[in-house]
Amino acid sequence: MTEKRIWLGLAASLLSTPLVFAEPAAEFKADCSVAQFTMGLRFQQQSAEIQALQLQAYNIATERLDKAVAAAKDPSKLAIVTDLDETVIDNSALLVRDLANCHQYDVWDTWLPWERDGTPVLIPGAKKFLEHADRLGVTIRYISDRADEQKKYTLATLTKLGLPQVSEESVLLLGPPKVERRAIVSADHQIILLLGDTLHDFDARFRKTPLDAQRQTVADEAGKWGVEWIVFPNAGYGTWSEAPLKGWEAELVVEPW
Image (cartoon, one colour):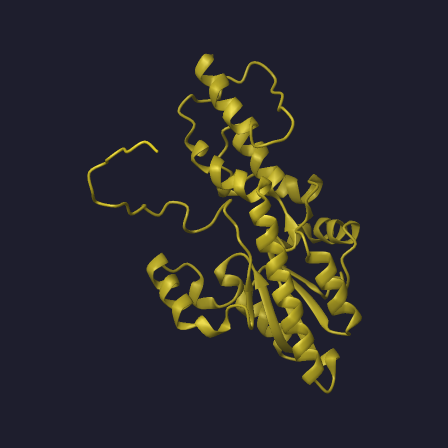
């Protein structure tokens, strides 16, 4: 019981208010493997640095958008394509809840109830940027791997959050790969910006490929980051989460300050 409460306290510390759990929780395991996500999720939800990075990304996006609109003859033929989760909306409350219950949240088996009943909040800067694009007459397309069969719930969430251009047509959810959904947009619009937190939000070469290949593609496309592609930080989950760490191969020497 003591070990159990230690793990629960570790997860609960992610929140500004204490979490309360019903007793008993017989399924809880003392060797809670998902506790490894605690520090990353604390950074994602609570740090001022993440807020700064998100605002920075949207500031860059705004600058690029304004430049493209100024050069365009018809801004309505321009489009921005944005991911939703961890790019426009913050789902960390779901991840914290799952972590507190020692549940492996990145298997996504708690996501459907969250889509229906969850209360995500906006990423800092998202609404201001999207409203600015809307005022400029630029087309907005939301491309997300949320469940298409639950589309009405995602539409309701985005509408409740006050985001512009939310409709059946503008929100393209899981079905064809994202590259195919982006092709639907580019068929009659010039996509000037892609925004996302996962690399396959930008290019099909990042989808289901090894990390070494992903890193090489990032380097190969160095000129697009912050210009055509705006990437948002996500320390909560990703294909990197099980990658081995590389340490300094030297004997540990402790020298107190």
